[in-house]
Image (tube, rainbow over all chains, first blue to last red; front, side, top):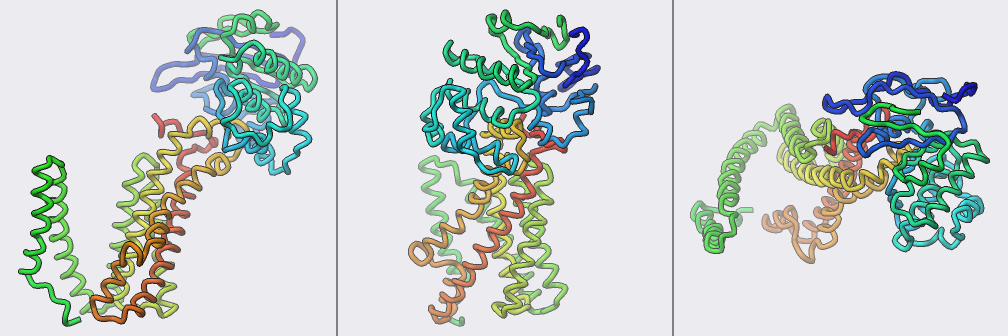
Length: 220
Length: 257
């Protein structure tokens, strides 16, 4: 789809997904080049989030293939795959009692020691200071919650970041911080970003978009 | 022991208390009369049958008959605990396995340490006591686990999406479910002697045993119940939480629809 670029991080072939006989996704074929920033748009219920959840290995397609770095998704150990293809939710919950428990989680997953100086650096990227580490999860605002949740996905940068309407409900300042963070990882770290959005300004600012309607890709 | 006599007249007179409860329930429209009547009839029938069976088993003093009683108690307890886990795949085999392993272990330790003898008069009541306590504990674990998985569905999904293994994604649910199974035993032990005199100890005192000796016996039972309910809850929960996931380590959404 992008001419000469051949290094696809994700390839989707003849993918279908149905629930109780109802087709949610129909014959999806899509190549996603490494390092791209791709926006998925379309009406609510069109199947965008379902496609993202399949790519993130949160659910399994009824038929068809998803290849990651040329290998079938099912050939990867699911937890290791999800560390490389990371899914960020629209309305995330923060775990436990403190922000620390959330920022420690990616270390826990990888069986590594918590690195406070690294975490502090990441917090600064989203305009939060070190004092936030020991804050109660009940004392952070909605925008701060989303920023902290995104850091959980990015402290160990994945190869693919899937953001499912992560800016919905955020004010302009928070949106800008989230955009900056994602742009930075896309541009400087080469993280491929798959963004689902209904936000017109985000769609207008996108260089590459995919439109999904009634479970089918209408426009790339 | 000879002082402990219950005549049919005494039983009928004691039934006055039940009639009193039924009268109040009827007058106040408490809607529990049907349950009380069914409960009383079941208790009379079940206990009468069990009484005669126990009399036969104790008199026969046969190892196979004792083991058969042991198996019947364990299977019944496993089945009933499993029914509390309706909606959790393999809930019955899991509770059956947990109760069987736990009861065998507990009773074996008690026999090997000389705390009880391998005779039906001691094995059967002890097995019943151990298995029923684990049954209640596992039932509570199952109920808590189902509810917490439903309540924290989103949080579990997020942990999986961050690359957590299913054990890490369920660790707090696992912890709370095990605690919910063990908590009633811990609470009852904490208040033992202050709020209630436990059944076994009361029975021994009724039968004329020195209260200090009866207390020693009860302390041993406390250790046994605490250990067995903890172990049973741990085995059942560690096997049950995996049923909420499929082979791809995805949450089994069918369980939540």
